[in-house]
Length: 405
Image (cartoon, rainbow, N blue to C red; front, side):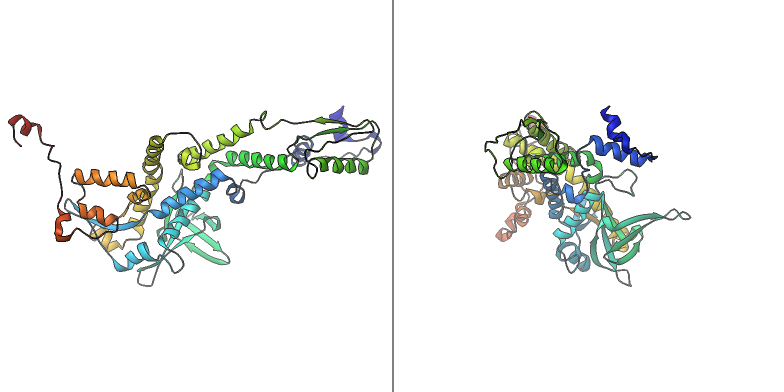
């Protein structure tokens, strides 16, 4: 009966009309659903604290990684330098950005939209003169049906340009075909929508004076204007007169509707969202300011974050820039390659950094001067820091059996 009246209205004013599928769906949605759609774009996602924290951590971590060129000389590996390329990698990739900001923006675009791009701008002689990150949301991918080649069309504030893949360096957050990326806005769409609705519920809950919504009953028929006035008056008790006593007369009765935050498991749902974002991004929960792990556990999780989450992006960028940024004659003729140094992420932890240096020196991997150079300190005078050290209490099994010192 209620459904029939809701659709057809009073019998005296029946109007027959054929509804399309979209109109019928929208009508039923308006009839039974009280909440509006939740937009899951970047504007909504970046206002959610776990998403904003994950974006900041991942983009800043990638921005901190210094990249440099190396080559192999037999078994030895040594740093090599091209003044023009070194300036772009270490000083200024373009006139507006530092290397940190350039890499941060590339990872930021990859985080939101699936891939970030850097335009390797060259002069007429083919020399690399600038590296410019491009906004992914302004890109459309086009495939040439005849050749099968892909082209990337950018439209940024009226500036339009089409790029071939070799002109751009790509960093993918996730991809299933090597061409189109899958970012957090796509992968975690439902999680973002759920947390946005929970945040909206919390705002409305406190706007309503921390009281549940309900039904206000009256004994007489009320006109629409009277109903609206009663609603406005009663709503005032939940905002301006919060925690005051409401006196209902004329037989009015208020019946609360909905669930309390405890019954709705509001706190649990927000915590679950943090766990979901941690799974999608590979960032440990303690870095998103949740969880109760010990310090040792957090240190191990941070190491896992570097090796399991960040390092794949670093290796991807090493291989991409190693092919597209290094001059072909240096890359193919002299064996130059790109390498990122993830050890800089240990700079903020004195204890971990000192233990790392100690192990490197003790195992004859670094000499003392190399460790001092990483700390921006001068070499030990007299060349003493250039000697490699080894622990004397280590020897081969054969030497021990022979009694050799």
